[in-house]
Length: 456
Ligand code: GLU
Image (cartoon, rainbow, N blue to C red):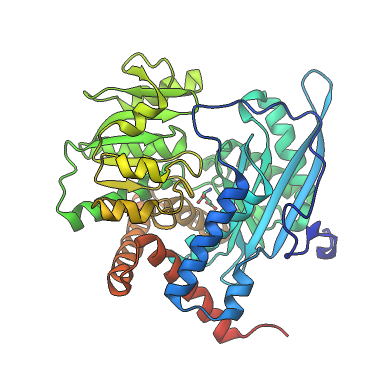
């Protein structure tokens, strides 16, 4: 087992700009999708501003603010992989470990051309607060590789994943840092990670290490309900919101940005509640059909064609037409920083439900509030994924397997509790739901620092 002292960490007070690393020579030019391409630096800045606002609401002690402002560890690794044509390409991988006072670092791995140190730093911090809000005994982490996953063959994807896992070595572990799927990764990628880890890091404890990643396929130690978990959690949140507002979901229209795991499962589950999907935007284009788009058929189309573009059951329109479309519920489920103040001023909807992490710019919440539009923030709305990851981790640790009803019931209970907690806090403190969610999470973390003190 590798010595912990061999960790390739940079010190926590280094910033991404202060730690220049070579650009992988062979990373292809980023394709420009039909989304706004967010800047990692802007995203980190916006996250930091939101954090400072929440510190004020929560009246957080300065010593805790200082700790939470920076991640604990920042790992960057450049690793070579043999491509199908025999050439070698260098990839840049990240793993940011933000905080582990509540439990092991936890969070997804993103394979995307837009991955950057600043982006992953913000996403890792978001995981810390998401776990704290949902009372999941994990800290926050996030990682990724700067690569367009669509350009890799299945074999290349496997070699990239195995080599990255090997490079991370003992910097991850089932009781230390537990990766999961995120954009561009899936249960197959998690299977490869798990298999590589247990075969290289601690072979004498192979079966004890199944919990090294979550989001695996069922056959490889995954749990029922994990694939749809984020979408399911979003729907539970929407149901709570509908009950709060006396809104009938039957016949409600929905618009979704991003039709990957989160967007597609949200649409499918919502359709079972009578909701009608009328507009979808993804990196390939935008489609609209006021009569309704069948989520199942669209899922099959996207599976085959890589995106919503050209789907025969709807009209192709411009990206702007997506945000101009009218829908009762808007679910951004793609990249961060998609909803600008300008969009917030004009969007025609009742509620925005953040399936993505950080899809809104600063100022959006206040504009929406002024227009009587509700916002269910990411920490709350998309937490279903990590909650069910926690259930998978428990099952692995205990060699148990729960049925789907049990997983869903436990997820529902947590989502309800978190939703009502956020609602109550926002009402009592006269703040936005985003500030309430962050402040509640920060308070839980601050209490632990108070009780335990800071070593030495
Ligand atoms: N990537 C997901 C998220 O952003 C899930 C993380 C996990 O299951 O650990 O919440």
